[in-house]
Amino acid sequence: MNRQLRETQLPSEHNHARLYKLLIHELQDFAVFLIDIDGQITSWNPGVERFFGYTEPEFVGKNVAEIFTPQDRDEGAPEKERETARRNGRSADIRWHVCRDQSWVFVEGVLTAIQDESGNLCGYSKIARAVRPQQAAGNLIATILVGTEDVIYAIDTSGRFVFANTPAARLMGRRVEDLIGHTREELLPSYIAADMRATHQSVMGGAQTRMVEEKFPTSDRGERIMLMSKTPWRDDLGGVIGLVAIGHDVTSRVRNQEERERLLREVRRSNEELSAFSHVVAHDLRTPLRAVRTYAELLARHLEGRVDPTASQFMTFVTEGSESMEQLIDSLLHYAESGNELSTTRVNVNAVIDGLLKRLDPVIRETSATVTADTLPEVQADPMRLLQLFQNLIVNAINYRGSEPPRIRISAEVSGNYYRFAVADNGVGIPREHFERIFLPLQRLESRNVPGTGIGLALCRKIVERHGGRIWVESVVGEGSTFLFTLPMQ
Image (cartoon, rainbow, N blue to C red; front, side, top):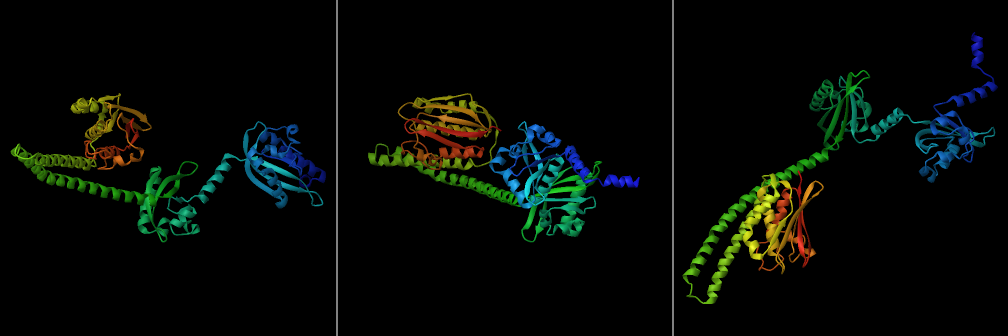
């Protein structure tokens, strides 16, 4: 029996060749074929049909370039592969190949150079197999673990590090080999280790993923803030055997957010101080200003008919100047108050326009203006601020009218996540170079004959921006202007 076994284990040279052919033929999981030095396919095994769909008559005689993708052919990949095999003895790669039906298969292949008895190149052998999902996943995971800048580590239930990548080791000021087999308490400051232990026990005990922020002091980069995702590590039976953690450095983002919040607090404080200051100044200015205006009017009535026209005109200038100053103070006060907290609610814009037109009825009648409004949406806004916004835009259109009676149309449409409102008029228009300037405080483009304080459009911009929108103008001189602004739908 032993002798017979030995004989079957030591076949003759003839049997070697027969067994080799049988082995190649039966390799169903591999595509095996030979190529001559010019790239022509000279042999075939059934694995070729399994992977590429070609029968032997269809495959043998073709140029091997036909199973390469068009892009690889254009880049000379088939020739480069043969050259590498000729130079180094073999060429291994993982690439897409094209099947008979023009579908693609992801293939791991090895091209080996074949030499004759004299050592001369006489062809190549190609062995290829499809990359299995498990194999691809393994390669991808290895690439991620090595290539990522994120921190990745795994610990067992006792808190010992089972795995750590280079960024994890660098964060903890160690080498990877110094982490494996050691506990948190052995490697980290006690306060950090204690917090981590509590988090790890909670994750493993609750068997649920958690997102936490953790701070790590480093010797070269200061304190780093890590956003860590920690999830239970389970065995094949579902039992928890440890924990896997993946973390991203969010130090810059957190620091920027903290600075942003600090600046917002400063802005709020400045706005509150400005609002308080505005009220004080307005009150302190109004009192003497009203006295000047009152006594100027009394003096005019007292001296009526007893002074020359020049003196009478001077007193008129005093009275009108006092009125203009009071209007400017009121406008500045409204502008300052527009930065205060909004009191928002659902507002029916058509109802706001209806009420506003009743309030503006005298000036509308006086100028023969026509104001029309489409069906407008409800918005989440501060009702009083919205009223100020439309009032300023309508009054502005009336004040800067052309030779024809003012025609003003208010409309709205949906634009992404915003409502876009438009207030269009047929007025004098605005030169393009002034499109931005008109929204600055105290900027007026016309003469003093046009009523106003130069605050109206600046107030409109402030109101719109406080609601999370933006405002701009489109205009042609002599044809009219359209003021557009957006308000969030939610």
